[in-house]
Length: 335
Ligand code: G3I
Image 1 (cartoon, rainbow, N blue to C red):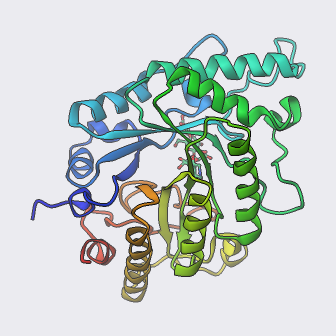
Image 2: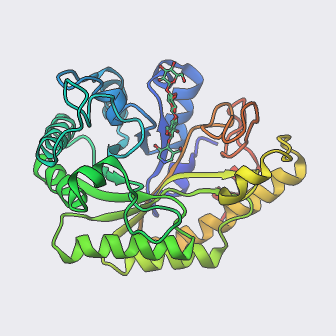
């Protein structure tokens, strides 16, 4: 039938997909996007390194192409991401002599960057991942010791949200992170976001990335995460969903050496059952959940190919390497 994911879920939440600009030029891929999805997130094109490679030069080409495609076809766009410690351009933290910049200089640069990027797409991007992954996985600290944190201090987060809000007051602003079902990390993220909320910082949502596997999370863990963050009076989105066939996220490194990468019938069934469970929980929380975005389009190419093991393939999405719906697709739409 002509029905796609977006149609089955029209009464629930937008269904999104992470994209790169090459997909807009690729017939089968752009057709699949249009048939199935109602929202897009640029996988890399709006990150600071790609979009702002030199202090006085922006590279708008890829991001523009994605936003233009979305506008033309009536899809929503989530912006990703304004302040992250990865994919950083080499100039950001140093002056022309290579010396680390001061707090004031870095704040000015952050403001310039956020104003320019958010301002360019004002009214065209409905939600932004403003700060990404600011909380560490282990240790005792609340803040990940990034350059932003070291040079500016903990208020870099509220500044980033303020700059984004000034540039587009109508955009929904998110804090986005992974491993949100780990109770220790979940509570840290909760504390961090609560601090922002209590201070009156313009933050509207929490993004649960959703880089999961067939072994995680449980329905209860997911239920607890969504409920906990929504309890702050914020909307919740699943921003980077995929279900790896390999070991649990935090065990993947250790299990990597022995893991096979064949997509057997058994794995196909287990993955379908896992996706069915996840979407059942998502639907239950439709009042708290305002979007679900998949991280990549099909098993033809995923960031999980080669991660964390070079040469190892993964099969984490709803469409196979020939763009055909898998068992997991049926599991998600037959409810
Ligand atoms: O664009 C360059 C290309 O010019 C160069 O020739 C090539 C050689 O390695 O690299 C290309 O850049 C790569 C880029 O993806 C585009 O393909 C980078 O090396 C590679 O590191 C980058 O990986 C991205 C990763 O974030 C970076 O940390 C993945 O595509 C992207 O899916 C992934 O997404 C992140 C989210 O933003 C945040 N949450 C976790 C998620 C998964 O890691």
